[in-house]
Length: 261
Image (cartoon, rainbow, N blue to C red; front, side, top):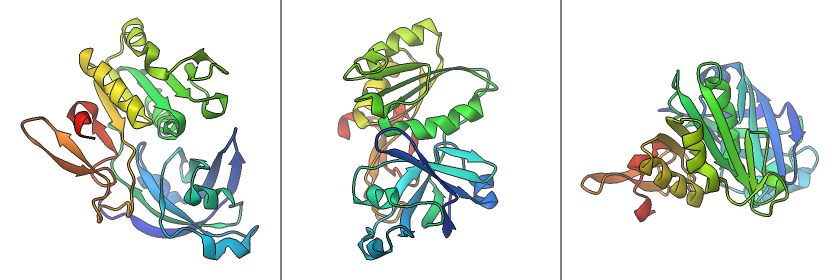
Protein backbone atom coordinates (compact mmCIF):
# COMPACT_ATOMS: atom_id res chain seq x y z
CA UNK A 1 0.00 0.00 0.00
CA UNK A 2 1.48 3.37 -1.01
CA UNK A 3 0.23 5.48 1.89
CA UNK A 4 -0.49 3.47 5.04
CA UNK A 5 -2.59 5.53 7.44
CA UNK A 6 -2.31 6.12 11.18
CA UNK A 7 -5.36 5.24 13.27
CA UNK A 8 -6.41 4.52 16.83
CA UNK A 9 -8.88 1.73 17.40
CA UNK A 10 -10.41 0.15 20.47
CA UNK A 11 -9.84 -3.56 21.05
CA UNK A 12 -13.16 -5.37 20.73
CA UNK A 13 -11.97 -8.73 22.03
CA UNK A 14 -8.86 -10.40 23.38
CA UNK A 15 -8.67 -14.15 22.66
CA UNK A 16 -6.30 -16.36 24.64
CA UNK A 17 -4.44 -19.14 22.82
CA UNK A 18 -1.81 -21.64 23.95
CA UNK A 19 1.39 -20.65 25.73
CA UNK A 20 2.32 -16.98 25.09
CA UNK A 21 0.06 -16.54 22.04
CA UNK A 22 -3.07 -14.38 21.95
CA UNK A 23 -5.28 -12.56 19.43
CA UNK A 24 -6.38 -8.92 19.56
CA UNK A 25 -9.53 -8.16 17.54
CA UNK A 26 -10.58 -4.72 16.27
CA UNK A 27 -13.48 -3.58 14.08
CA UNK A 28 -13.06 -1.29 11.07
CA UNK A 29 -14.99 -1.86 7.82
CA UNK A 30 -12.77 0.55 5.83
CA UNK A 31 -9.61 -1.31 6.87
CA UNK A 32 -11.30 -4.62 6.19
CA UNK A 33 -11.89 -3.57 2.59
CA UNK A 34 -8.20 -2.77 1.99
CA UNK A 35 -6.21 -5.45 3.84
CA UNK A 36 -4.83 -8.46 1.94
CA UNK A 37 -3.26 -11.75 3.06
CA UNK A 38 0.44 -11.19 3.70
CA UNK A 39 0.13 -7.52 4.58
CA UNK A 40 0.80 -6.28 8.11
CA UNK A 41 0.19 -3.38 10.45
CA UNK A 42 2.59 -1.48 12.62
CA UNK A 43 0.83 -1.57 15.98
CA UNK A 44 1.54 -0.26 19.46
CA UNK A 45 -0.27 -0.23 22.78
CA UNK A 46 -1.62 3.26 23.42
CA UNK A 47 -3.21 2.65 26.80
CA UNK A 48 -4.20 -0.13 29.16
CA UNK A 49 -7.29 0.17 31.34
CA UNK A 50 -6.04 -2.74 33.42
CA UNK A 51 -2.59 -1.22 33.93
CA UNK A 52 -2.85 2.56 33.50
CA UNK A 53 0.38 3.10 35.41
CA UNK A 54 2.35 1.36 32.63
CA UNK A 55 1.42 3.83 29.87
CA UNK A 56 4.69 5.73 30.16
CA UNK A 57 6.63 2.46 29.90
CA UNK A 58 5.18 1.60 26.50
CA UNK A 59 7.99 1.12 23.91
CA UNK A 60 8.46 3.96 21.44
CA UNK A 61 8.66 1.75 18.37
CA UNK A 62 5.70 0.08 16.71
CA UNK A 63 5.69 -3.69 16.15
CA UNK A 64 5.01 -5.19 12.69
CA UNK A 65 2.15 -7.69 13.10
CA UNK A 66 0.67 -9.65 10.20
CA UNK A 67 -3.05 -9.74 9.56
CA UNK A 68 -4.26 -13.04 11.00
CA UNK A 69 -7.87 -12.72 9.91
CA UNK A 70 -10.18 -10.24 8.23
CA UNK A 71 -13.91 -10.88 8.33
CA UNK A 72 -15.40 -7.87 6.59
CA UNK A 73 -13.79 -5.47 9.02
CA UNK A 74 -13.36 -7.73 12.03
CA UNK A 75 -9.57 -7.80 11.95
CA UNK A 76 -7.44 -10.04 14.12
CA UNK A 77 -3.77 -9.85 15.09
CA UNK A 78 -2.26 -13.08 16.42
CA UNK A 79 0.71 -12.21 18.61
CA UNK A 80 3.36 -14.05 20.60
CA UNK A 81 4.65 -12.40 23.75
CA UNK A 82 8.42 -12.17 23.27
CA UNK A 83 10.01 -8.74 23.80
CA UNK A 84 9.03 -5.37 25.33
CA UNK A 85 6.73 -4.38 22.43
CA UNK A 86 4.69 -7.59 22.41
CA UNK A 87 4.67 -7.73 26.21
CA UNK A 88 3.07 -4.27 26.23
CA UNK A 89 0.48 -5.56 23.76
CA UNK A 90 -0.11 -8.61 25.93
CA UNK A 91 -1.33 -6.38 28.77
CA UNK A 92 -4.18 -5.01 26.66
CA UNK A 93 -7.78 -6.07 27.10
CA UNK A 94 -11.12 -5.30 25.43
CA UNK A 95 -11.72 -1.56 25.59
CA UNK A 96 -8.04 -0.65 25.51
CA UNK A 97 -6.65 1.31 22.57
CA UNK A 98 -4.28 0.31 19.79
CA UNK A 99 -2.29 2.62 17.57
CA UNK A 100 -2.11 1.29 14.02
CA UNK A 101 -0.26 2.22 10.83
CA UNK A 102 -1.30 0.28 7.76
CA UNK A 103 -2.05 -1.90 6.03
CA UNK A 104 1.65 -2.02 5.08
CA UNK A 105 3.66 -3.88 2.46
CA UNK A 106 2.47 -6.11 -0.33
CA UNK A 107 0.45 -9.29 -0.08
CA UNK A 108 0.64 -12.85 -1.34
CA UNK A 109 -0.30 -13.26 -5.02
CA UNK A 110 -3.56 -15.21 -5.20
CA UNK A 111 -3.87 -18.09 -7.65
CA UNK A 112 -6.60 -20.46 -8.81
CA UNK A 113 -6.61 -24.06 -9.94
CA UNK A 114 -3.31 -24.91 -8.24
CA UNK A 115 -2.03 -27.64 -5.92
CA UNK A 116 -0.68 -25.56 -3.06
CA UNK A 117 1.54 -26.31 -0.10
CA UNK A 118 1.52 -23.87 2.82
CA UNK A 119 4.61 -23.98 5.04
CA UNK A 120 4.91 -22.11 8.33
CA UNK A 121 6.92 -22.12 11.52
CA UNK A 122 6.04 -20.59 14.89
CA UNK A 123 4.60 -17.09 14.54
CA UNK A 124 4.74 -17.51 10.75
CA UNK A 125 1.34 -19.18 11.09
CA UNK A 126 -0.97 -16.09 11.22
CA UNK A 127 -0.55 -14.68 7.68
CA UNK A 128 -1.06 -18.14 6.18
CA UNK A 129 -4.32 -18.57 8.09
CA UNK A 130 -5.74 -15.52 6.33
CA UNK A 131 -4.22 -16.67 3.03
CA UNK A 132 -5.73 -20.16 3.12
CA UNK A 133 -9.19 -18.69 3.64
CA UNK A 134 -8.77 -16.78 0.37
CA UNK A 135 -7.34 -19.75 -1.55
CA UNK A 136 -9.27 -22.74 -0.27
CA UNK A 137 -12.34 -22.50 -2.54
CA UNK A 138 -10.30 -22.40 -5.75
CA UNK A 139 -7.28 -24.63 -5.07
CA UNK A 140 -6.16 -27.86 -3.45
CA UNK A 141 -4.24 -27.05 -0.25
CA UNK A 142 -1.95 -28.97 2.09
CA UNK A 143 -0.57 -27.14 5.13
CA UNK A 144 2.56 -28.04 7.12
CA UNK A 145 3.38 -26.17 10.33
CA UNK A 146 6.17 -26.59 12.85
CA UNK A 147 7.38 -25.23 16.17
CA UNK A 148 9.76 -25.86 19.01
CA UNK A 149 7.10 -27.35 21.28
CA UNK A 150 3.37 -28.05 21.36
CA UNK A 151 2.82 -24.45 22.45
CA UNK A 152 4.03 -23.20 19.07
CA UNK A 153 1.73 -25.16 16.76
CA UNK A 154 -1.83 -24.66 15.58
CA UNK A 155 -4.42 -26.46 13.39
CA UNK A 156 -3.15 -27.60 9.99
CA UNK A 157 -2.73 -30.81 7.98
CA UNK A 158 0.73 -31.84 9.25
CA UNK A 159 2.36 -30.74 12.51
CA UNK A 160 6.05 -30.95 13.45
CA UNK A 161 7.63 -30.15 16.81
CA UNK A 162 11.33 -30.20 17.61
CA UNK A 163 10.71 -31.89 20.97
CA UNK A 164 8.17 -34.34 19.57
CA UNK A 165 5.49 -33.30 22.06
CA UNK A 166 2.83 -33.03 19.31
CA UNK A 167 2.79 -34.37 15.76
CA UNK A 168 6.00 -35.57 14.18
CA UNK A 169 9.36 -35.03 15.84
CA UNK A 170 11.78 -32.87 13.87
CA UNK A 171 11.66 -29.74 11.78
CA UNK A 172 8.87 -28.90 9.40
CA UNK A 173 11.07 -29.04 6.28
CA UNK A 174 12.16 -32.62 7.04
CA UNK A 175 9.30 -34.06 4.97
CA UNK A 176 8.94 -31.22 2.49
CA UNK A 177 10.37 -32.97 -0.58
CA UNK A 178 8.21 -36.05 -0.01
CA UNK A 179 5.04 -34.00 0.33
CA UNK A 180 5.76 -31.98 -2.79
CA UNK A 181 5.98 -35.25 -4.71
CA UNK A 182 3.08 -37.01 -2.96
CA UNK A 183 0.63 -34.14 -3.43
CA UNK A 184 1.98 -33.09 -6.82
CA UNK A 185 2.52 -29.53 -5.55
CA UNK A 186 3.07 -26.75 -8.08
CA UNK A 187 2.87 -23.65 -5.84
CA UNK A 188 4.16 -22.99 -2.34
CA UNK A 189 3.70 -20.18 0.19
CA UNK A 190 5.82 -19.88 3.32
CA UNK A 191 6.33 -17.72 6.40
CA UNK A 192 8.54 -18.28 9.41
CA UNK A 193 12.12 -18.01 10.70
CA UNK A 194 14.87 -17.23 8.20
CA UNK A 195 16.42 -20.69 8.50
CA UNK A 196 13.13 -22.35 7.58
CA UNK A 197 12.58 -20.04 4.61
CA UNK A 198 16.12 -20.54 3.32
CA UNK A 199 15.83 -24.33 3.55
CA UNK A 200 12.41 -24.33 1.92
CA UNK A 201 13.65 -22.06 -0.87
CA UNK A 202 16.53 -24.38 -1.68
CA UNK A 203 14.12 -27.29 -1.93
CA UNK A 204 11.56 -25.40 -4.02
CA UNK A 205 14.33 -24.30 -6.41
CA UNK A 206 15.61 -27.87 -6.79
CA UNK A 207 12.09 -29.14 -7.49
CA UNK A 208 11.14 -26.17 -9.68
CA UNK A 209 8.18 -25.11 -7.54
CA UNK A 210 6.81 -21.56 -7.66
CA UNK A 211 7.39 -20.31 -4.13
CA UNK A 212 6.31 -17.07 -2.47
CA UNK A 213 7.83 -16.38 0.95
CA UNK A 214 7.09 -13.73 3.55
CA UNK A 215 10.33 -12.50 5.09
CA UNK A 216 10.91 -11.51 8.68
CA UNK A 217 13.14 -8.49 9.33
CA UNK A 218 13.80 -5.91 12.02
CA UNK A 219 11.72 -2.84 11.16
CA UNK A 220 12.34 0.50 12.84
CA UNK A 221 9.80 2.55 10.87
CA UNK A 222 7.75 -0.04 8.96
CA UNK A 223 6.82 2.40 6.18
CA UNK A 224 9.95 2.41 3.99
CA UNK A 225 11.73 5.47 5.39
CA UNK A 226 14.68 4.10 7.39
CA UNK A 227 15.79 1.26 5.01
CA UNK A 228 16.77 -0.79 8.06
CA UNK A 229 14.94 -3.88 6.77
CA UNK A 230 16.47 -3.97 3.27
CA UNK A 231 17.37 -7.36 1.80
CA UNK A 232 19.16 -8.28 -1.46
CA UNK A 233 16.71 -9.27 -4.22
CA UNK A 234 17.51 -10.31 -7.80
CA UNK A 235 20.13 -12.50 -9.45
CA UNK A 236 23.92 -12.71 -9.15
CA UNK A 237 24.20 -10.60 -12.29
CA UNK A 238 21.54 -8.04 -11.39
CA UNK A 239 20.35 -7.44 -7.83
CA UNK A 240 19.50 -4.58 -5.51
CA UNK A 241 18.29 -4.01 -2.00
CA UNK A 242 14.53 -4.03 -1.44
CA UNK A 243 12.72 -3.01 1.73
CA UNK A 244 10.85 -5.81 3.47
CA UNK A 245 8.31 -3.33 4.85
CA UNK A 246 7.61 -1.62 1.53
CA UNK A 247 8.44 -3.85 -1.47
CA UNK A 248 7.89 -6.93 0.72
CA UNK A 249 7.36 -8.71 2.98
CA UNK A 250 6.31 -11.18 0.26
CA UNK A 251 8.89 -12.02 -2.40
CA UNK A 252 9.37 -14.75 -4.97
CA UNK A 253 11.83 -16.96 -3.09
CA UNK A 254 13.85 -17.55 -6.26
CA UNK A 255 14.75 -13.84 -6.30
CA UNK A 256 15.98 -13.65 -2.69
CA UNK A 257 19.79 -13.66 -2.42
CA UNK A 258 19.85 -16.03 0.56
CA UNK A 259 23.64 -16.28 0.59
CA UNK A 260 23.87 -12.53 1.32
CA UNK A 261 21.30 -12.39 4.12
